[in-house]
Length: 168
Image 1: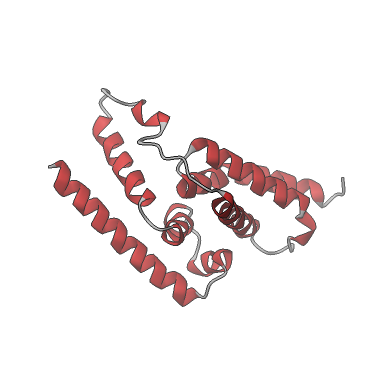
Image 2: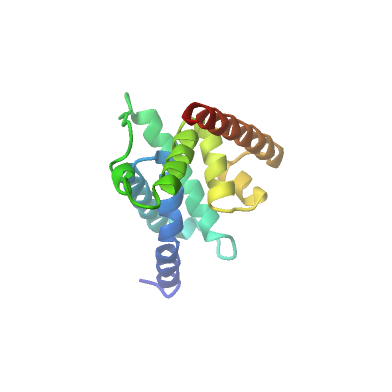
């Protein structure tokens, strides 16, 4: 192992919580998210010589993860459909039930967005990447990113507003 390889391993390990959060944002299944993180980390470690020192490691790995997810979606002939993830029932009956219901409504709303809108929401709103970095991860112009983000936010608000009307 070279002297420069050790820090990238440590830096990648430090990014694991963010990678898992981003994976959960775009996959909506714990197992798929874990698999996606594993694939992205394996690819990053296997191609660590491609990462340019001085550039953002998180953006580089987010791009790897985005591409891995696109590959996975294309490869699937059918998707698993779950009414709710297993962890959805964890907080039933406790005092945080209302907050939990709100979180489930947001997760459901995000799951109804298109893949391109989920990716933009995940990178900008969940991960907090600057627009420029998110555009580079998605390999799209900044103007396209901002317009997708506006459309994604609008769609998210409409879905949540409809959910609020239905549950009243």
